[in-house]
Amino acid sequence: MILLRQEKITSAFMYLFLGIIILLPFILILGLVVKSGSVLQDNSLSELLFSAEWKPFQGKFGFSTFIYSSILVTLLAALMAVPLCILTAIYLTYYAKRSYLNIIQPVIDILAGIPSIIYGVWGILIVVPLTSKYVAPFFGIESTGYSVFAGAVVLAIMIIPFILNILLEIFKSISKELPEASIALGATKWQTIKFVVMRKALAGIISSVVFGLSRAFGETIAVLMVVGNVAQIPKDIFQPGYPLPALIANNFGEMLSIPGYESALMFAALILLVIVMIFNLAAKWLIARYESKVTI
Amino acid sequence: MRKKLQRTEELFFLLLMKLSVAIILCVVCVIVFTVFYKGLPSLSWEMLTQTSRGGYYFGKGGGVLNAIVGSLYLAFGATLLALIIGLPVAMLLNIHLKKYKRLVNSIRFLLDVLWGIPSIVYGAFGFSIMVLIGLKTSLLAGIITVAMLILPIMIRAMDEVLKEVPAGLLQASLSLGSNKPQTAFMVYMRQCSSAIITAIMVSFGRAIGDTAAVLFTTGYTDNVPTSLLQPSATLPLSIFFQLSSPIPEVQSRAYASATILTILILAISVLSRMLSNKYNKNKIS
Image (tube, rainbow over all chains, first blue to last red):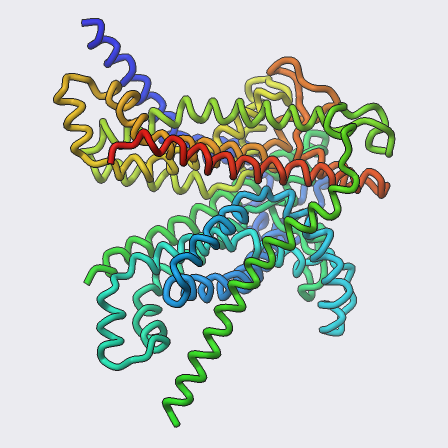
């Protein structure tokens, strides 16, 4: 009898906790929507998203410069990270010895475990000076180093472990028969990878990229430290930018003293949340499609 | 001739692949080496054992003990809170709801979405909740916010292993007369103890290294907090603040703090591997 009651109570708690977690994303969205209510009332949505006028004291909040910076940094980071990850994943799955993967896996784990502030410190110590001394002059541009480019390099390294882990999973899940059949028909190993494996894995690869993009889009501290934080549309990638997360993090101190500012920053957080959720949904949808196709 | 071209192409890409692997390995080494190289010289006993005194950020004496202890408090608290909520949920998904595949998969999807939400968004959300209930920046607010952040990570990490437990174990346990919670916390927990420990350690590492979520919620102070309602310094934030100082001496202390944080993270990673190997023995295969 006591046992039965104990079971009921314990189970009830388990369901309660599950309820909390299921509600969490909705509360998150709702909370941010409510908080950004006042800025949405004073400005139209299109003004907020597409205007470049950022004058908090006059109550003018145009986020387009920040959104543009975010997109630029994120895409650039993906451009650097994705080819590296695909090549590494193919090498580890199809060319390297088993023991090799056992060495690399902990290294990937370390890379994933390093806190973003450390990446930021490293970015300031290495990436920023390199950018201003070598990379920018190479393209004939003067730069302080604190730039969109530096932010993208740091971000690229930060998203490598995420993308790489997903890619390794995907290549592992491709059945052995298909590549074997291709080789049996006389194709070389590289041809098999290029025409059979890559085709099979395409949806998976794209979804891993989208996951990486969503990671990169929300990354705050490391990017904030190296990206320069100047509210302008960068003319080239060696000029400073000012992504959305950096905007939120930099202004949290002052936001309570200016009316409407807090609301505007909460709206920025909402934009981040919505974009990242869309990315995630898209990636999931692609994975689901891929999984339905992967079995022959 | 075509054969030769194909061979060249393969060799070319093989070279690129090896190069990519080398780049990734190099980057990890360079990051760890840079942080240690810059940080170790200014790392001193004083840094580890003293709190920041007045004028610390202008080059006066003291250390970052307040930040180290604050970070440990925060990470312990958040991990504990996440474990209390997360472990039952992970069990629930794999024992009570095992039959309802669609439902469980939807919840997994929801957790993945939560996992993808940037920590700055959690920070902003935590901050607005704080304002709503009249809580000041404090250790408690930080713990709750960081717990939200690491919950999905922890649950999904446990879930990945719990779902591989053979159905026979559940059936055997139930047929011997134990109920579902007992099966969860006595049988499954033993079977998966190594995975649970790994999940806890990974979450702990995330909690101790996160900056954006604590920026809004935990505040900053030069003292070691003595209650949950006091603000607390955290190691990532202290690195950030020290680095913003124009004084080189303070900056080099930031590098030393970064070294401390990196050592902590590496230690957690090693410890996690050791513990998980140790508890793997409990497993019935």
